[in-house]
Length: 361
Ligand SMILES: NC(=O)c1ccc[n+]([C@@H]2O[C@H](COP(=O)([O-])OP(=O)(O)OC[C@H]3O[C@@H](n4cnc5c(N)ncnc54)[C@H](O)[C@@H]3O)[C@@H](O)[C@H]2O)c1
Ligand SMILES: [Zn+2]
Ligand SMILES: [Zn+2]
Image (cartoon, rainbow, N blue to C red; front, side, top):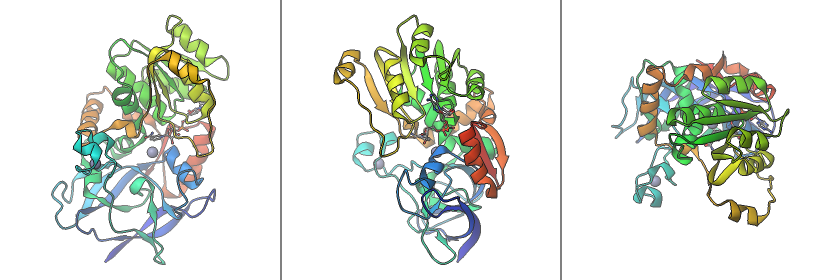
C-alpha cells in the first residue's frame, strides 16, 4: 500500500515548482514514514530547482522539517509511531572510515530510505538531501528522525534540520568559536543569522554581521551581532578590521556561497584565523588569488557541511536552549505559508524579505 499525498516537485531546470500527487510507500525495514507538520524553504531547495546540485529531476523538495512518526518498518527500534521528530540528513552509518575513526559528524555514507517515493505515474522522485519533506508525508531512514521535546513548535524546531543547524554548527563546531573570539559573518540569511546566534552562544566578544540588506542586519543584531556592516555602503573588509582593533576576525564565516564574498571573508580574517565556507557555490564559480596570501595568512580554511553536526547530540541540546529562551528559533520564521506558495517563498528569498518561509501542513 502507498499513501497518496501532496508534495512540491521540481521537474526541470529553472521551471517553477508544482504541487503534485506523491505516492509514499509503506515503510520497509529500517524506514519510517513521517507526517510532516512544518518544512522550511531553504536556499538549497532553490539550488535544486536551478540544477545547481544535480540533474536527477524530478526532485521532491524540502529538507528542514519536523513532524510525527506515523509508521515504522521492520526492525526499527530507534523511533516509534507517535514520536515527535526533527528530520536530519545525517543518519550516520557507524562503519565508514569517518565513523570508524570516531568522527561520525563527517559520516561519508549516511542512510536514506531504500524505497523511492514516486509521482502518480510511477516516476521515481529524488528527495532533496534524501528527505523530500515539502510533502504531507515523507519516507526516510529511521535514523533520519531525531526525537525531540514536543513542546517546541514544528515551524521553529524543523529549522534545526538544516539551515539553522548549518549556521550554528559552522560557528561552534567547524569554526570552533570560543569565549573571547572575534567573529565576522558574511551573509545573514537564515544560515548566516544562525551563525551569529551560534557565535553569541559560544561567547564571542565581537560579532560583525555583513549583508547587503539592512533587514537582515536588523535580524543579525537581534541574534547577537555587535556590529552591522552593509556591504553596499562600505568596504566590509575594512569594516571588519575596524571593529577588531585593525586586525581582522579570529573566525570568519561565509554564508553566501560566492567567490567575491569568500575573498572578502578571507581578507577579513586575522593572521592564523579561520575561514569557514558554509555557503554553497555553483559548479561554474572560480576563485583566483595569490597562493602566497594563503601561505602568509596561516590559519585554517574550512568548509562546513551541515555545521559538522551530530543530530542526536545537537538537536535535543539546541531545543533545550530554545525552551530556556537562549536561542530564539521563532525569530527565524518570517512567514508561515501553504504548500502551494513555495515559488513565492523563493521570490521572497531573492527580495530579502525573509529569513525563512515555512510551509505549515
Ligand atoms: N553547508 C551547508 O551545510 C549548508 C546548509 C544550508 C544552506 N547552505 C547554503 O548557505 C547559503 C545561505 O543560505 P540561506 O538559506 O541563508 O540563504 P539566503 O538567501 O537566505 O541568505 C543569503 C544572504 O546573503 C546576503 N548576500 C547576498 N550577497 C551578498 C554580498 N555580496 N555580501 C554580503 N551578503 C550578501 C543576502 O542578502 C542574504 O541575506 C546558501 O548558499 C545555501 O545553499 C549550506
Ligand atoms: Zn559513517
Ligand atoms: Zn537546507
